[in-house]
Amino acid sequence: MSFISKLQSKYQYNSRLLTSVIVIIVVGFIFGFMASGDLKHITFQVDRISSSRVKIFINAFTINYWYLFVSWIAGMVSFGLIVNYFIAFFKGFIWGVTFTLLIRSEAVFGFFSFFKLILLQILFLLPALIYVTYQGVKMSLVNLGIVTIKNRDSGNYFKVILVSLILVVLYSFFNSLFTNIIR
Image (cartoon, one colour):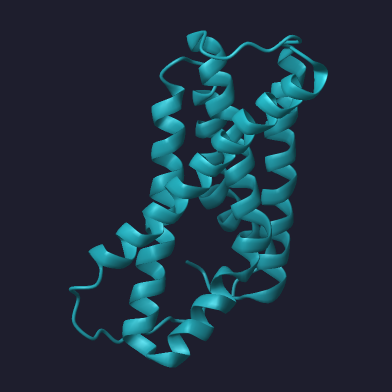
């Protein structure tokens, strides 16, 4: 097997794995959209609470970091494959429900509200979710013996959680700057 064919087969595997992660998130979004589609017109009111930016930062960080950490931990065990896909599906489902409820409550303006609420999540949390889920699934496949990695260094897998930590800290920081709504 030549170097080019080895490279192509590795790229195809990584590409399929990455595609599967993205498809799970999109399917979760669609299921969330469909699951909340039967709800009648609901008017939501968000109370504004003046709170310190530190409290908002801590709240945003704790809400969003836990599922990435669980996904990362799950990648260390064989059954983590299922856990990682479930977490990705769940996050997509939550985004789908949020989108539907905002559309139902505010019609066309709901799309803009959704976009404002989710813009930071698209910029920071979605890449973190895709990256951690992808690496966790890949590590689970290694643990199952389905995939082999030449240099199985635990330090490389530790970098996954550091990258996600940085992305969640950035999300929480910008969230605390741009909002004064406590979720």
